[in-house]
Length: 341
Ligand SMILES: *Cc1c(COP(=O)(O)O)cnc(C)c1O
Image (cartoon, rainbow, N blue to C red; front, side, top):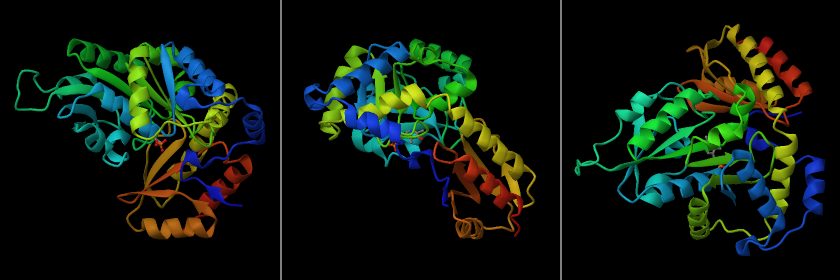
């Protein structure tokens, strides 16, 4: 039995999801004639109380599209130093949009409204790049699954309004944040100009993300998605999985969070651990003691058929998910309990 904890993206569609996939009606979505894609896009726009949404092959493409629309070449966006848009999208911010990032030195990938305010370049000072966008991430990935406080998100919105900045939420794991902080999609829809969400992570779909915003914004997004090569044809087969996931797989994220906390409670007591980032959702980041190298820990885990990933600096990451079962969980807790250097 392999225990794969490298990411919540490793899940495979369950048989109910596959059944829905086989039965769904499809058409050519580049002509907007796929009824299942249209249904998913309407469903998600309504969930968030926003005008419109668009289905994407990846979260990266959805974020990159939003950044392209919200900025002009030469502009600067503000994000945390841990941000996915800065660290893990292949340099797309500069490649696709000709934009630079002003990095905030935040806490676990999150920052304050004051930090945003002091990162804005004075608009009349033409020597500096023009600040035009603020990007936040919820939950934070490199920050270890931490959730934002909506009060701070609203304060940042006020700063954005006062300074004519656009405001984008990278919500790849927003579902995890919502079940943990008891917030609703509409709470976020009211705050942001645009939101990206992933179906291919905790929700267990094989492929897919959505970008959500105003009608005008999504019309622009349609053109950018096309030029990035993201116009898909009978993508209803994928959208059907998304509809199933939204109806069945959100509440169960609590189980993933509980299991992550149970792993945390064992790691905290382990002699080989230097630090465990406090678990809030399904991501757990921990640092090993100096006398135990990443390589030897990972090898011991591999010998036990457990996979996780290294984050550098003797830090490791594991992510719980739908296909990480109770049986695997009990086995993994055992492996950790009996682990010795
Ligand atoms: C996974 C992820 C994305 C998008 O990733 P894709 O693999 O392109 O779907 C974006 N932002 C964050 C924070 C993520 O964790």
